[in-house]
Image (tube, rainbow, N blue to C red; front, side, top):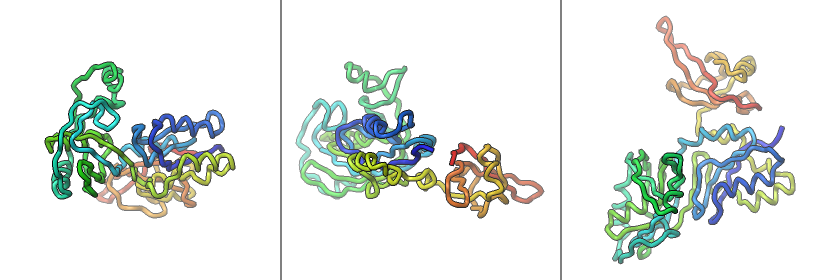
Length: 308
């Protein structure tokens, strides 16, 4: 069996997420599947999960994961890309801003809200990516998209530079947060630097550099860096399938609670990792509840099966 697992890569400033995937692909046997979860802009750094081999099946299960970023924004500067790399549209003197004032502004972003995505983004409209339209000089009206800010905290402010940390839902553009914060303040604002410190179970402290990946691939030790599918889905509750039911799971058949070593009380439709007794991932499934003769019955239905 070929390589399979997830690489918790620490992306550096400069390359695109696709550039990183291409670089990793060159280090692997031909036809090995490779992809990334959670795009980072070229200027952004930090956690970029790279799925390899059979683990490319995991992509969809990372979409709803919370993400945490450390950002530096610059008050008093507005650009067409909403970050420091863009064309300057307006500039003003923001004046003195205290850390407490910055926190008051940040706190207005908390909770569920609607965000207008930036023109310079990979979103599509009528088959065209927004950034392609923007580079051709076109700007179109964009629909607001639901996002959620779970936590946002001012860390330090030095003149017009504000360092803050934010934990948010999928689809959140930190550039747009900086742009909107600047608008609320009145002086404008843009993103100056961005580091993703966490995506679901992946943390920056446990990440590896591209240089380390290169070195270990030459030594044929790349598998040592890969996180197993079972560990990569640590944000999902785990159930352990009894050996007698493993083949049914791998064939996509539902199993009853008595085929599970320890039944965890979870709401219906909760996604779970279906593991064998050694802890290897068999499938991702959903809890299915039914009531029969006033007695609660239950099943686990495989949603996506993994070859172990």
